[in-house]
Each structure stands twice: as C-alpha cells, then as structure tokens.
Length: 494
Image 1: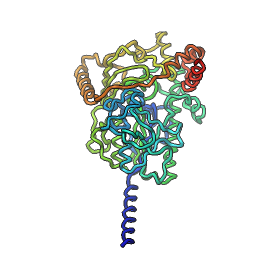
Image 2: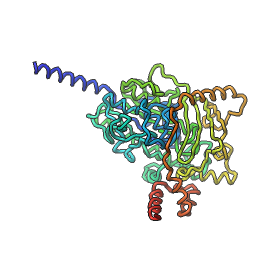
Image 3: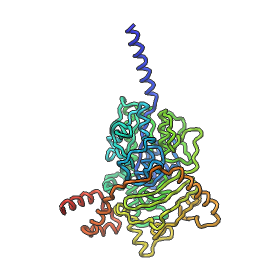
Image 4: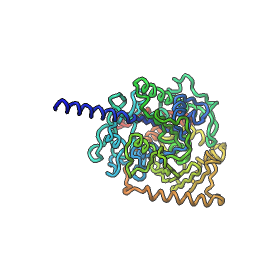
C-alpha cells in the first residue's frame, strides 16, 4: 500500500513539474532613454541586427507610449501595471519610504504566486542591469507583503534551468546619458558617422549636435550587441524555444524635446515582442499601446488573471482596444511641473498647467548631459535658430498644444489656436479631463529626494570655471565623476 502511495506521489510531482515547464520563461529588456531610433524602425546611420532579427521573427509595435517621460514615474507605472498618478508615484524619486496602498502590488508578486522565479539584472550587460527606480517603498530582492516585506525580485543576474519558469527584467543602461558614452564610442569597431545621422528639424544642425547624436546611436548599437548576447545564452542553455523576449524603452531619448517632455520624442518608445510559440512573424501593429499594457501582457503570458486595479490590458487579447494613452509630467528634480497629455497615435493634446515654466528650465542635472541645449542657447542669442528650433527656448510654454501626428509627426505646428481644429481641441481637452478624474489618487502627498545636481552645478561654476566653459561650448564634462569630487570637497570643508 505504501509503495503504491509513493508511486502516486511521484506521478503527481512529475505531472506538476511538467505543467510548470509548459509556462513560458519571460525576459523583459528595458532600454533606458530611447526613442524609435532602431534600424528596424527606419533610423538612418545605426545598425541593430539583433533587434532587427527579433522584429523579423516577432511583432513590432509602432505606436507604444509611456505614461510619463521620466524614468521613475514611468517605471512605477510599469511595475504595478497601473498609471503612476493613480498610485501617487508621478513625482520623480519621491515617496521612496511610503508603502503602496494595500490595494496595489508589483506585478512580480502575482508572477511569484503563480510559480515564477523573478530575476533582476543580467551578469553580462553594462552595470548588470539591476535598476528598479520606483516611487514607492521597495527593495530589489526579498519577499513582498507590502507591510513589512517589500522585495520585488527573488535573485539577481543569472537564469538557470532550475529557475524555470522564470521572469527576468534586465535594464540596458548604455543609452542612458552617462560618463561612459565616449568610451563606448572609442571601443566601437564602427562608430556612427556624424555626417550620416538625420537630425530632427527641431535640433540645430551643428558639428556638436551631430556628434552628440552619433554618440547616442553608438549606445544603441551597444545595447543591440547585449540583446544578441542574451539570445545566444538562451540558445546555449536550451531555453530559446520556451522564452518570450520583450524589448522596450522606459522613456524617450535624453535630448531636446525628449526625456522629460510630453512631446512624441519623450513618450513614444520602441516595443518588440518575440514569442517562439507564436506563428505570427514579421508583423507590424499600428494600434495604440500604453506601457502598462505590457505589464498586463506579461501576466497574461504567464496565465495569471489580471488584477482589477490594473489600468493596463493584455495586448494580444482579441478584444484589446485602446483609443488614447494618457501621460503626465510632474516633479523632476528641482523643477516642479504640471502637464498632462493624451495621444491617439493620430492626434496629440498637451495641457501645460504651469506655462510660466519654460521647456528649457535650466535643470541642473540636464546641464551636464545635453550638449545640444548649450549649443542652441548660443545660436539663439545670435538669432540663428529657426522658428521650429526656437520653440523649445521660448520664455514660457503654450497653455495648450494640439498636433496632427499624421501630417506633422515631429509636432512642429501647434494647432491649438487654429479655429479650424476647435472641435478636435475640445474633444481632446475633454478626454484629458476625464482621464484626470479617473487617475486621481486618494493621497497626493509626496516626499521628494534632494537633487544633488543643483549643488554640484553651483560648485562647478565657482570652483571649476574652465570646465564650466567647456560645458557651455557643448562638451559633456560628466556628472558622476564630478559628483564624487564635490563630495570630497564638501567633506574637506567641514
């Protein structure tokens, strides 16, 4: 009798193990500060063979938008699958010690309950890719109950067969502005030729802006190599046939009108999904998708029921439909903004509730990492900017912006004051107000972290004037190294 019982138990364990293996592994590659600047999206001068292959064997989405153009609010929304305003996470790097309302949970909580091992980062990518950067109380590794335990993941860096089914989130850091850009370019076997890049019309054509854009594309090529490396590891470990790979950005590129702004170049991100079990390949979808939809889609891939609180929806559901993505911009370091936007992929509406704060707000951190800003300020003073280039450098913002994205994909012609489009304006305005009400949090208190970049910039101006002048000429003088020097200087002054 006992022997028969052991046999039954063994069969049940074996069946359970076999069932678990039918669930797909899922890898979420999140590239930092990147717009649709990949070869498979038609970008000139850049080579991205691994992402091209991923798109050719999967689905490329042409109208995916984040819900905030700044990293931590955007990541907060994706980690919960719920718009960042609704969970009071819209202010950059605030509320780090405030637990989420008990109603909400990170999506990894649901994956772990369903038997997934959740892994953060990868041993082979730049900086190991372990960034979480969310605006609520959390820890990278550990259990989650939202009261005493706030862990988001189970382990770091490595996926093995015994982890299956696993979910892995890997941050591809290279495209984020950093002191490594020159080193990556210097090490490249085929650095991007500045003469071959195609600048947006709103960026002045200048040797510095061209070189800066080329350096950015060098980083794009670097992360493409990292994508290839991860796919190769899946092949080597025999997991390629059961692993879904998702590639997205966390917000738009870090340049003029990009990261930090509600224009298309700040919100519009690449999204490519490769599913080895999907017979649909080389497919391009034009429908509107929001970043929180990716979170819901991951749960759907894992066979997990979507929590009611999620504002995201599984994008492969037959009835998936999204008319608008609603986006917001609030605090970013020392600049306390309030702007809201919706995009339909055809029309974009932006409402600037603080028009007195200009786009070029001289935010300290950005002074270190946007050569185009310094060059174009000089050109403005010399009256050498075109009208489209000068828009970003006006002393105030328009209260409202309306763009026809089909006719004007770079959002150069603001139609908000054009009576011909008054009905479109009113409809978009009303829809934005409806979203304002839907996403309003129960609690709007926030506790921002101090932006050390403000102090570092003052110190550079006073103590390193030669270096500061180089910055004004469009040279990236770095931030992290200077921050370390500033801390030493500050400690010696005590």
